Image (cartoon, rainbow, N blue to C red; front, side, top):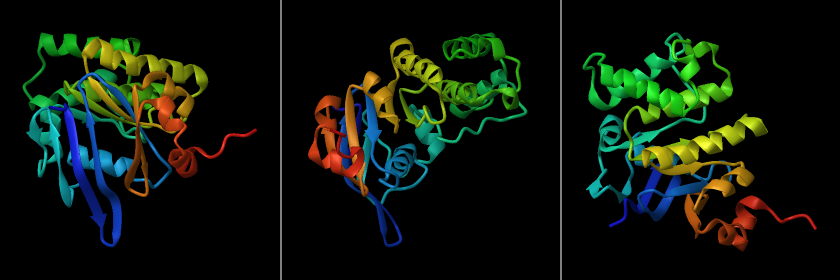
Length: 243
């Protein structure tokens, strides 16, 4: 049985079909990229997996259990976390306190314990924010706010993390840091990764498979080198290469 099994999922907003009969599977431990032009339905698909929106048709099964009808906090407690393209940390809280919010999202408020503090420090060290433990989030630059977004998601102890354009707005050096972090999420924590991204050169360095959406439909999936040569993907998203 697949770790994540999306079966014929459709979502409509009035007369607009944002996601149309999408089916794919992921195995545990994979890093899979999700690409497509703006408006293709990528973030809507994330919202359906995370429980933000109900879907109109289809079925999503995660780790052997259906997600149909679950609220986002129930999906989180099943082991799915997500980040957002526009970071929204609690600006007046420290990095440590932001991570504690992630613990509360998974376990409820049970007070601070030595184990929670150790875990928060471990997560912040992994993402490269250990020196900002007691720094308010409003003082962080963009790359560090993105790291904090990931840290807060990791605090929920996910089995699957949905990453939404974590490279947006970063320079080349910061992208290298982000790619190393995404690899570490899988290698250190054993977390499966589904990742929306537009920076194709960076994405191709990390992912093992690509899914391509266009107009709400999954038009191609497979290994990255095969997908980027597919005529449907070139026409819909990548464009013709210059001679």
